[in-house]
Length: 132
Image (cartoon, rainbow, N blue to C red; front, side):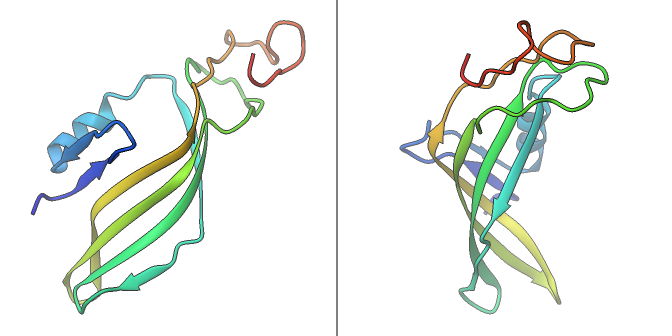
């Protein structure tokens, strides 16, 4: 079994990243200047055996690309994603549990907005207009 799996199974794009080095490279290749916050909720855990468990968590993602320097607070727009994770955990000994795999399902998604130029407190026109 690989040491860590991240996947977006169909109807997602079918992406699958396996192993620590591949995961490190995948997450290390994310765009510079991306500010992203994921709000997680409702995390029921089901113990499936003495050494395995599963969990489902629900997520909402706020994200912007192109952020540089100290912008301060970024005005919020609508979330760019809403979905859920299905996780599998394995006990490695004693009370230690590791995340073995995470599958992402995104029934809601949209483009990531771009940040406006550094130092500008608001976008052109003086108002943040979600979806424009």
